[in-house]
Amino acid sequence: MTLVTTTEMFKKAYEGGYAIGAFNVNNMEIVQGITEAAREEKAPLILQVSAGARKYAKHVYLVKLVEAALEDTGLPIALHLDHGADFEVCKSCIDGGFSSVMIDGSHFPYEENISLTKKVVEYAHGKGCVVEGELGQLAGVEDDVNVEQHSYTDPGQVQDFVEQTGVDSLAIAIGTSHGAYKFKPGQKPQLRFDILDDVAKRLPGFPIVLHGSSSVIPEFVEKVNKYGGDMPNAVGIPEDMLRQAARGAVCKINIDSDLRLAMTAAVREHFALHPADFDPRQYLTPARDAIREMVKRKIVNVLGCANKA
Image (tube, rainbow, N blue to C red; front, top):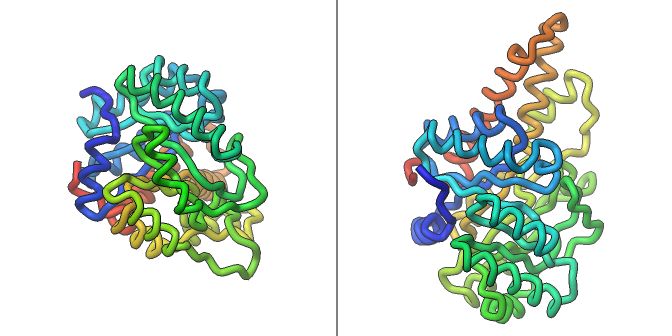
């Protein structure tokens, strides 16, 4: 098996009313937990790498881990760069074996975003790689992405942006947010489906992406807190809202914080119950298992992509 692009994945997802999970990876146990879940549920998969992950694990190690997952599972897997900051980073990933990249020019003025995105698209398409662009900005913090003010996507710009840049998919801002603290205390999570519907009408059949879409699963937060954490205000996106988005134009849903919470909860619980353990295999095994079960839940209950591989 070789890596695939998201082109055919998204076409089937749009027509079938489901989304593909894009899960951030940082090490072997995370890759294994995600891919074991996808294999059990027979689901297509996007494994994505952030700038922080490349710094932590190194590009070559992550690529080789994903190649091992391909050989082990036989699944259709795309390897995606999450939040590429500039042309050079995108080029490095394209040349280094990624099948998909995101260029995030959302913090630039509109015309500059177009220019940068178009430059990446032209290079990527020449190498058989697909590109995700972004319009609008999500508030929150995740790795090198730190945005204080949320800026909803302007539906009036999307058609012009796609036509001028040639992007293959578009990330939009409709109320999701990066990190585990997506909302202020007491604030009710709400997605702007009016914006999503307007975008879908202007870009019929075009794949839309939601970033910052972890649900910050309460049982994991409770477990982290039980064993010494301090996350009283951690609230995510309700899973029923994400499923509604997946039934429409949203073909890719990004999940990172839920992976971190699942892993951390399992490790903390293990040490609380077995404080004398010092073999990493003893505490990373339940961490990997927790990721597998969480991803299976997402595939079945949120994404709707079980048995679509």
